[in-house]
Length: 353
Image (cartoon, rainbow, N blue to C red; front, side, top):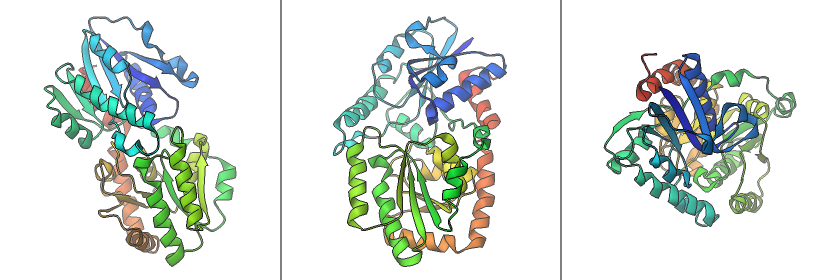
């Protein structure tokens, strides 16, 4: 048999691209024939994939199709006659982008409509969280359903970090961090509000670092910048696109990781923050609680003053921080490649290899 992973876009450094590449490498290690095909391939991962139009189907193929957006490939995939599995990474509801980017809104809405096409036409669905699988169940898919977390190659985090960033962040200020695309569903405006009250009431010697790109959603980014100016708030850093070594430095120097996202199908940065033993506060939404487990503090209702208070208590309670680190170390074990890959092998029907 062959395992054929197909993506619309095979990107370098993003969660889904890294996930697909890790699956591919692990299959090869086990002497299982594995290929990756995509419509668009980043030059930096070109050696691992071929263009989708070059794919020639074989009857013993098992396709694992990664769905995370609306695109024409969603329709093309269903023309294949071999075994097809869907790896559902979730699609952000379009209404988040209505005010900022109609094109992205349209794409998200299209993706959610496309998801319905796969009902009764795939052999199995792998959701990277129970939250994602619940969406599949609500659409009455009649096939095998698996909840298997996204694969994360933790060896990547042992790379050398950026010395200049480490130096700049070692000035005695408390570093409040969030990592994620600058996008309305990530709710960076709430993080700015949290930080405003935290800095004003509890710790003026602190900074907020928002790691992420506003790619395609510049209107939202500009709104955030205006909000910071309106509050006359200092020490809010928008990093823009970073090299991986720089991202590692921000995690290593983070005092606290705060997540206010309103929609997450998994949230890889939570796992990354746990890996680096950064104390975490996150809003209970989507798959957040499921991914985080006991590795951080979960907040229910949004209140920036309350969040600022919790941030202050956590930063001044070494006992709670140490317990959180212990929980994070235990939680990380559940995301290790060996454990997760065994589940993928079973779902793909090649666990006998």
